[in-house]
Image (spheres, rainbow, N blue to C red):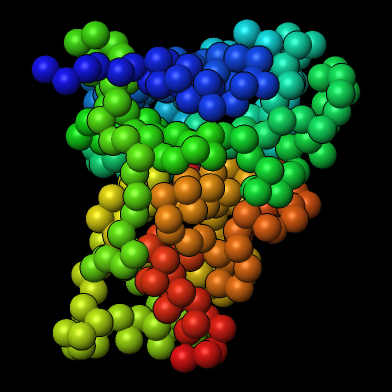
Length: 333
Ligand code: AHG
Ligand code: MN
Ligand code: MN
């Protein structure tokens, strides 16, 4: 039998690559893995207990919120906040920043989407959690402010996601490759299952909500015509795969190759997805795996953020496939 490596053990081993590390980042990544276990426990029971349906409120983006979103948000804030490892947090479900009760010791900022793809909860389709971690710029954690959260994605020290699917998988990077762990419910541990994930140079899937076709610009429309043309030399037509949970669409394309596009639309001229806790962490992971992530014009990781809930168009996935999609967006093709 091959050796079983838990995520906590793996994070600890990775720390040895950074001799100056204090262990703080290792501890807080372990906290995130713990919070993921709590969210998983509820997500897999969602059909059994009476927590399905709308919470009756809207989130700060003006979108309807389901109970499990709020539950996941509370669990993550409480599980992580209590250890004092984060000075500051920002969540999709909170309009402002969150200062944990014990912020005096933490040197990091955590940004997260507690439950991604929440429209899929009621129908037993994969959902996820996405997170992004920065070192705060303030020397005193008590002075941490929104500017500690609004750093470029290139400053991330760690990022990851959890996908609650047919199995539960946690994927993370600290800038030293991308590693995936599958949850074993019999022992309550995430075990190393995908070491050093690399994404194919190109794939056979394209993922976009084509129902919004009428809202797309000409570049996106021409791209969709192109990707469906018959051309064996370039592997076209590509197959459509679109789940509507970013984490699940991204995870599949990361492993199989392909491209995910959420372009500007007339409804969302700056894109729908959020830069700080959706695009940035996945862009960090994608680049670490050898892929590419842009807003159609610039690298996601180089965007200078101005707002916690800022939106961005997103072109992410296999290097060659993303470049083609961008060329249509830029009018080069
Ligand atoms: P969330 O559930 O966190 O609000 O995110 C939903 C997002 C993302 O997961 C997905 O890729 C996208 O919304 C789907 O949007 P469309 O329904 O417009 O395709
Ligand atoms: Mn989301
Ligand atoms: Mn969400």
